[in-house]
Length: 174
Image 1 (cartoon, rainbow, N blue to C red):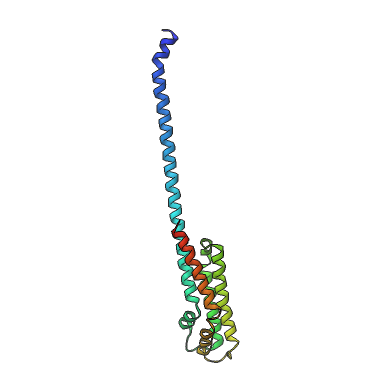
Image 2 (cartoon, rainbow, N blue to C red; image 1 turned 180 degrees about the horizontal axis):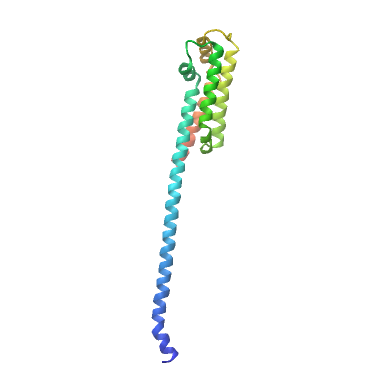
């Protein structure tokens, strides 16, 4: 047998092997891309879920620190104004710290709005407490906080909530 005859015998076999290798490589590449896409989709879904949970938790935080809600929920009959002031500030700090890790899922501008709302409510409590004697019953301070809330604290809370609503709308349109 000469080289030409050998080439005629092995050429189809070589073509079939090369074709099979190309087909297997294409299939493996296709499966790899498919698995990568599935992985990315699963990660995206998990991230979206965590971001929505962060928005939920900070919405709850903002609703809980709104002056009216905070005073009505936390005020106790046996407290004086000084005790109520301390208790309200501690409650805000505790709830904020409890949710602090979730800030990584909140856009920076919204996070600033949330911090500003917390600061405004704390400032309102401290300002109102300077306008009543420390030993009066807590309802006097509570009434003062609620009366003074509209100017800045409620607006800061509302602004932070609105910022979060916009962020959630953007998430849902992606």
